Length: 287
Image (cartoon, helix red, strand yellow):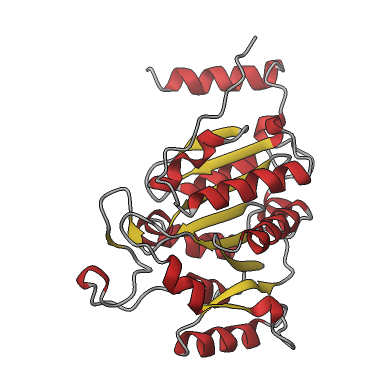
């Protein structure tokens, strides 16, 4: 018999935007009727790295910046799972930035939620890749990961939400999970999630966000037009929210897996031909 994991209470500061992300994810998984044993939530380093401890699921805490290769491997090992990666802007855009580029290109059937607060909250407030010029003496231009995703042809779902607008956050979380469930590939959802301790941006973001879902004539299926509109809004110092781009392309697992050969996690390891190979592999590590 196995012992069922009991979710713990979040350890985040009161008012942290990550609470909204957790609630949206829990609500979306329940609304889609995805049972706990079919959920795999992989978390990165940082304050958001404990999110998988706070809901019923299979969970895994990766090395710094390695959420995306881990979720990609999880999906290839068992494509029947609903695989969700969660992390922060430091984990996802700094040390994990190279993996983000290749994940957009590969389009694995996973949902990737990044909680962006523009700072390294766990290590006392240093400037992250998305920190604006001037924050903590930052001299660099901030990274716009949505525009990065738009520039890579393999990307199929790009969206941004704000934890201060929970209704839209839930809608976009549902849309992201549905996109992957329908075989569309990787859903990328960035959530503006203020750090109330080191970079409390609630007041600033409340007035600078801009909802493209409510913009008449905005077409999320037009990549070039979406990129142009994102650049215009950036020049106006606005933060676009909503479904920014949705395209069509095969998911990685639909072409990478041999249809006549079960995925690794779905194989019967009791078969003599497989158990022998597994034992040989294990023995190779102790020779």
